[in-house]
Image 1 (spheres, rainbow, N blue to C red):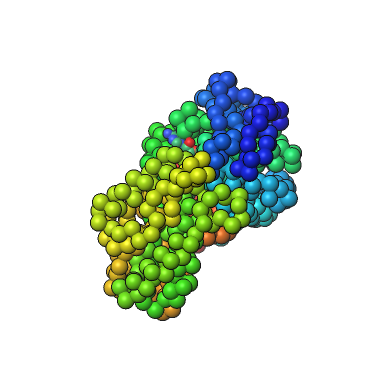
Image 2: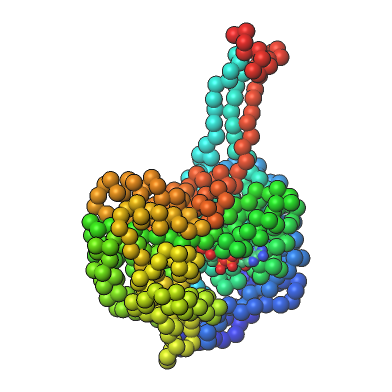
Length: 513
Ligand code: NAD
């Protein structure tokens, strides 16, 4: 990749080179026809310029779709086990480069290194899982209702897959979409979030390194309106897979409707931990801290609501507050730090806005409640981890996705009430219960209408071989990962082979048998 070198200071003050990164189209690194670039800066330290990226437009997107469409004609005919070998090679390359990629991601996204390593590991896991699928991609064979006739259903690729991804899992989510798309025989054009374009660019570098045929994987960076919308409208992109906010997801869905595109949406969440009166409280506090403040609360599955049984509410809140106060906020590359910054000034403003709303609604700030602006904090977008108590289920802080380090604790009198509160939001992504009572665990497992459910673990922590996604306004009926991911990126074709040598009519000639 050619690069333009400037100098920038890292968080630790050392000089490093800053590259101009390009789009990856048809196996080449190319500038946008707009002639414009945008900056990607470290949210923990705005003086740290991670890189400059192409501010692309519809022409760039069209060029990428042309390349992907051309490549599709041959890629779809490459045997799936052979396609899988490229995924395996990329998984191995990512494993080799895990630390480097994790460090760069910490700089561009702001979650602590331990978590960015997990993000890269998810991409590795997905690459290997889908490489295995290359030797499966199971279809169906089933008996015919007529003699001398053979029935089966096989998966077929769809075409150019348009992928639109958010900033909070900069490589895991792109991998969750790319790996199943490619193993099924589709080609890919991906538009990463403008706040974290480097991680996907690094993935493209690895695909280039392992020799993926040109045009099979293409990256176009730039804005949602400038690149995302033309992708949604493009007649030769028959499938769109989007992860992001419910508001933008709705626009994506509407944009895809006129052409009846296949559209897969993974959107917002307002997830709940239910803590029963028989729970191991220390375990529940461990889970609540990790669930609420991991990735500074910027996870679709973040434990942004907690409902605690009235009998243990005070003890639970006291323990949670004490542990929250001890959390160290700061530079995500510092191994002693527990929580990094918000991704942007506007995300920090949103957090502050909701803290104000929570106070005005009558909830109590048990701990936290302020942005951090002193000293080095002023260089980034930091906020204290914040626990609200005395929250009522209908308050806005208990209903709306904040996407920051804020959790809202409510009271309940029974598991039934906890479930009703849990289900009483417009989202349906993840939920969890802490209890030692198997009856309560099974009741909640049955009645929580969420796509993911945990027992004695927080609302975060999905594994790549199970379906991932949610109900209600979190999703549109599809799931990511596991075999569900294969379902998103393939179409069924049912095949009937009649070797009787005579006309046999289904449903009609069966009467004579
Ligand atoms: P966002 O909706 O603002 O942006 C997501 C992507 O859509 C970005 O790449 C953006 O550039 C693009 N985009 C924006 N406007 C567009 C348009 N008009 N047309 C096409 N594309 C457009 O979301 P975000 O702020 O990047 O991410 C945070 C959100 O993502 C949260 O709501 C979170 O819950 C959700 N999320 C959901 C999951 C899940 O699996 N359910 C996972 C991670 C994040």
